[in-house]
Image (cartoon, rainbow, N blue to C red; front, side):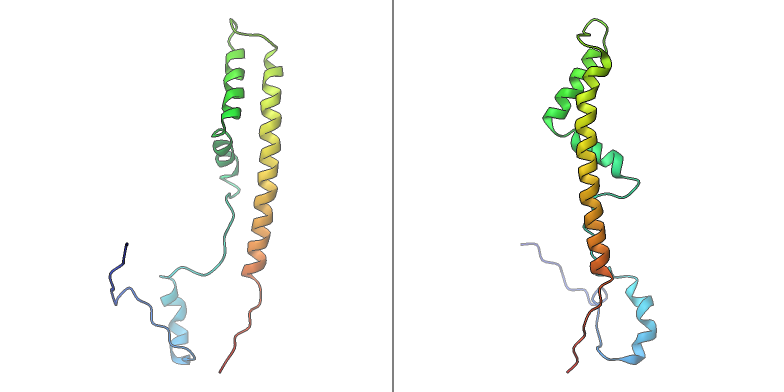
Amino acid sequence: MNQQSYNPTEQRVVYPNNGMCHQDWKKVSRRYPGNSICTTKYTLLTFLPQNLFEQFHRWANLYFLFLVILNWMPSMEVFHREITMLPLAIVLFIIMVKDGIEDFKRYCFDREMNSASIQIYKR
């Protein structure tokens, strides 16, 4: 078991209904992570490289990439170069669109959950 040691300087003390501490709340809360939900896998900058990296971890995609590379060598050329690239490009594009749509749905759900109103019950 991995147990963390107790360090009182790293612990956060919460005082409910204490208006005096409210003005310092933002300054103190910067040290602690928020409670927003983020389940997306990609950002706009990382979508293409990360998606291609994930797709080429599949053996079938690596096999087709190997065939494309072999076909670009003049001594190994069996078909036209563009024809061997077509199946791989279609599969990569379809999977990329599917992953993009799924990630966008997760982003919309996260945004909906993070902006939802909550009810606070008082005693």
